[in-house]
Image 1 (cartoon, rainbow, N blue to C red):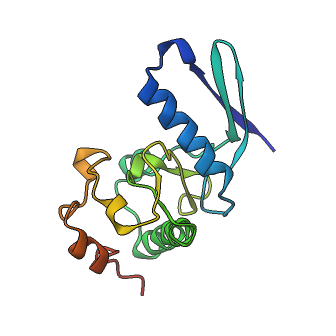
Image 2 (cartoon, rainbow, N blue to C red; image 1 turned 60 degrees about the vertical axis):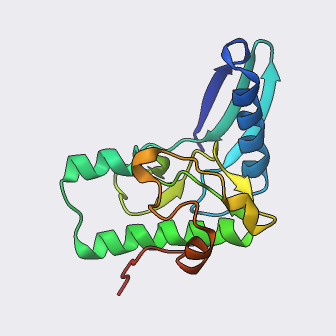
Length: 164
């Protein structure tokens, strides 16, 4: 098994960034699913944090879409199915990712461009009460238009995604 190591200079992090890193690590340590990027280890050796994760050699979905220009209907359905399995799992663990976008969906290999793993849990939050969904966050281009309207958000957990 090949691993990737993300090295983060603690000296260059402000308190908010450091808190976000620690939150992401805590959430990833609690998750274990084939469609979630696997965290293998985390440690601090001054002046750096080291995050050890599985190596994803296929790049991200955004770059793959640009490269392919289009997915077949079947491949798109498989990709979305693997994404939704990961999202369903994190929701059963009371985690909201809050920054799902093609750049945060990683492909494990160059050969398989439909099996995705959700990555970058830096905006993720444990959802203990519906009120914790009020915070607007994530990448502005990808924020759901109804974000911040609790009743609508809870009633429309998924955008219209046909899988048949």
